[in-house]
Image (cartoon, rainbow, N blue to C red; front, side, top):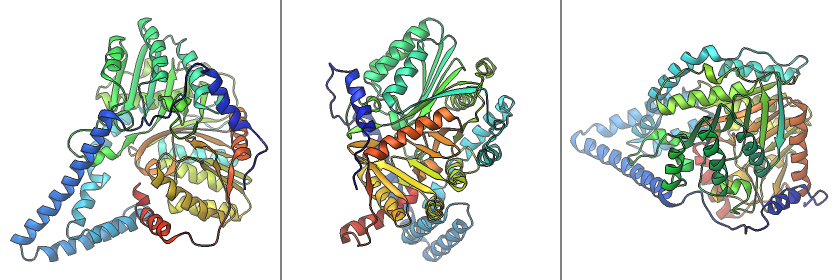
Length: 530
């Protein structure tokens, strides 16, 4: 069923095109090019060699030790029992047990060599030391007076799981597109007097990065401390040597998170997917955006690129500043005094609750997933979700079904054009299962939706966290949780614009083609690992 009343999404598209009347918008795929593509291919090749080496080692054991196959079988079974007693999700346990058994006799080796409890232990210790040394800078606050029970419940969870507490004294502004968010961000960066901190999964050469560097060079020359963290998977091969020299010559400090190296490491799977900009400790931005031209529709890769951002001014900025400082210390391996960068913002007079939070493997719990789970559980009237990928675990799927069946208005917005076809196929498959129970699934026509946001009647979440197991369990993420009226109204208008332009998927009882069912079944098996 196609809905054609409101033209908001088209206006957003046309608004950006009017901003660049003399520049043709071209279709260029920029995500995996040049040296970055070679590095990823090399890493995958070495990973295959790594598996082959394990297989050869097991064959060698079998040849010199007659009882090895029996020993390996016992070890595989003991590994399966161990997996059943871990805190992994039911889906993840099932997939790992399947792999351990089907990859006999070396399934047990593969599991333990891939288990983050072992391969990420040293990194967790480093983060533990960083967190301990900086705990004096943690804010100790409470939700705003008159906050709803849902807000209080969500804040209680984040305090216990992530050690973070909410702020008041903050104002905010919502941006329904990457272009509008970056325009505001660049203008604010040009006014920086003390420091500019930037942390993004993707930092790529192009029009947007050139605009940034023009501002950052000028501010660095004026004595402003400018620091950039970029992820090597997202940004690999996307910043030229010429640009790197320009950055270094300007006195801008740029560090790379978890560099891809010529030999395979399981920890390469953990990526910094956060999107943070902090200016002078007074202003901060987050959202779904990255510093790359597709995010402002300067390059058209998959139709119109739909994204969002939010700006905050005031006391809550410290939440994002501390996130960045901790990650900077981890990446650079250098400790330093945080105090010059915190407690700099003035109370904006805002009376809403603002809670910046981060998630990642450095925490004990699954914060990214569990905040979403809490918000879904607490929704009483409406629950709107916008995400590019929908590969959640059973916990989220079951909660959405229960809410829809209980009469809550549950709506899920997905792209109309995919950027990763296999992930899109499983996303649609998962979403279509929900339509049977009353969830409204809407695709944005001629657009790739990269926005990661949730809206209920009592709160909003805007940030970097997708509804997939990578964001839930394997990536460093961040978001802003708030009950601020201006943010909630801005996000609601954004949702309503997409609803009005979108195509609603109907529940269809007949089975899809056999080939489609086989492919989606195979993808469903590995979806907990995607």
